[in-house]
Image (cartoon, rainbow, N blue to C red):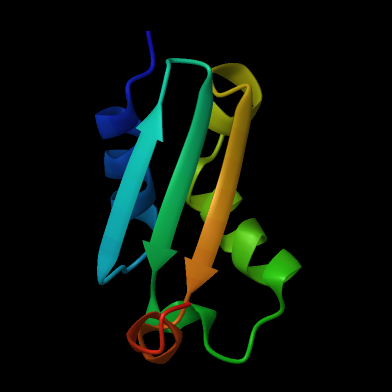
Amino acid sequence: MVTPESVKSGIEKGLACERVEVIGDGQHFQATIVSAAFAGKTRVQRHQLVYRALGDRMREEIHALSMQTLTPEEAKQGG
């Protein structure tokens, strides 16, 4: 079973992040991700970076992932 911790670990391994928080029930997850890599990117481009970090797990193990993707500056401003 996929855990929030394993999703968090997958994101952190594939994307340099300042902060990652994940909650979920094994199939559906919510994540808040703060990364400088998001600077200058659209919301779709930010989500694509996270999907790439998770790789095949997004297709095979994780059924739903809702994300709040923020730059460090956006996080300081309260998102």
